[in-house]
Length: 77
Image 1 (tube, helix red, strand yellow):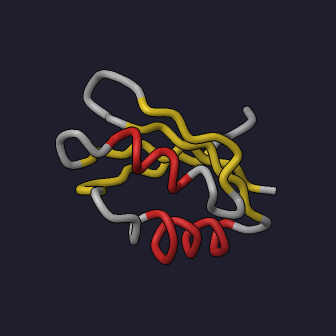
Image 2 (cartoon, rainbow, N blue to C red; image 1 turned 180 degrees about the vertical axis):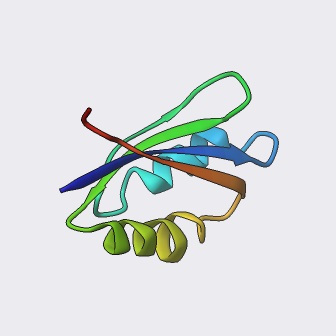
Image 3 (cartoon, rainbow, N blue to C red; image 1 turned 90 degrees about the horizontal axis):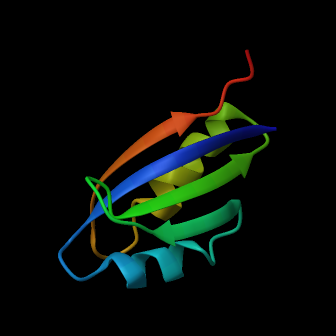
């Protein structure tokens, strides 16, 4: 299982709606609107890195109101 944090910037005033919509996507564990340089932080999981990439590109990035994403895979050192 691969997990990642996805840091999201949104259009002004869209953070709450974006977090709500993303929270419904299968593979998303949690989606929270936050303050700071990013507007929404998402924790997601998938079976493989490729599947995680498809989740981000095909589902998360297609949500209306998102302007930029940064995916940070979780590592266990």
